[in-house]
Length: 70
Image 1 (cartoon, rainbow, N blue to C red):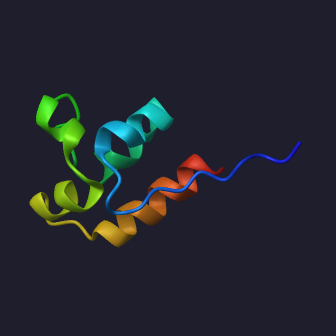
Image 2: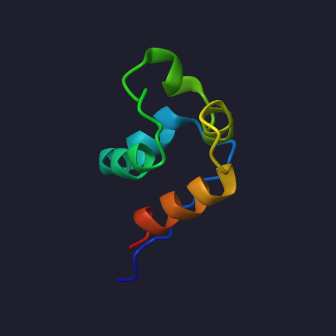
């Protein structure tokens, strides 16, 4: 049975990403996105969180998708 590909975009909310796979927190933490426990961060998009922390949102999305689909 082929594994279903999961894909997130810059518009995907942090809370949604974490609900897909809680271990994706390690990818986010690797980019310096340390406020994952903050209630507001759950409603932020990947793009918003990346901009606040000065990180390229396209790179974050790429690494999250790689992690989710390995």
